[in-house]
Length: 281
Image (cartoon, rainbow, N blue to C red; front, side):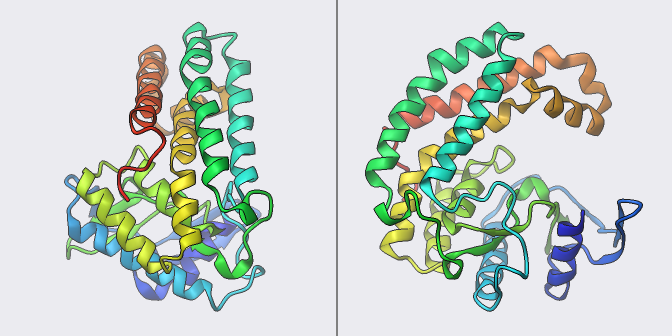
C-alpha cells in the first residue's frame, strides 16, 4: 500500500494516475481521488500512444533517480537466471496443487513442461551472455507499473487515460515491461497494435542490440510465465483473492479453472507455432 501511494504521489503532476490524498499505515488504508471514467471497450492506436507516452516519462525520470528512490518492481527480472528461477518456482507450486486437480497435472507435464524445456534452451542461446547471471546495472533499469495494461486503465470523459493499480511499482528491466504489455491477458491487442507497441517502446528505451536481443530471447519465457500466472486460481491463495474481489466466482470455480487451463494451453501452443520467435519484431 505504501509503494502504490508513493508512486501515485510521485506521478501526480503528470495527471495519468489517481491523486494520492492520505495514507495511514497503522490502519493499512489509503485515500485517493475519485476517478470519473470507464473501462476501455475498444483499444485504439491513440490509447497505445498514450501508454507509450506514459512509458517514456517513466524511463526519462528513471535516469535521474537512484535505487533508494523506489524499490524494485514486484517480481522484477534483472537477469536471465532470475526469470528462469521465477518460472521454476511457480511451476513447483502448481505441481504441488496438481495432486488435487488431475487436469492441472496433465497440463503441466504434457503441455507446459516440453515447451518450457525448449524455450529455456532457446533463451539461453539467444540471451546476451553478460546478463544471464549478472543483474542489469541501475542505469539500464526503468520505473515500471509492473501490472501494466488497459485492464488497469480508465478512460476519462475528456478522452485521456488514467492508469491504476501501482502496488507492484518499481524498477525493472525494460524488456520485461515491453513483453508483459503484449502478453498480459488484460490487453486485447491486434497483431498490428502489438507490432506498433514493440517498435515504439524499443525506440523509447534506445534500440540497442542488447535490449532487443534480451527482448527476443525472453519473449517466449515471459509468455510461459504468464501461462502460469493465469493458473493462480489453482492455488488456494490465488483463488481467495479472486473470490474476495468477486463473490459469485465461488459458485463457478470448476468452469473458471477449465477456462484458465484453456488460456494457458493457448499461450503454449502459440509459442510453439512461432518456434520461440516473437512475431511482432
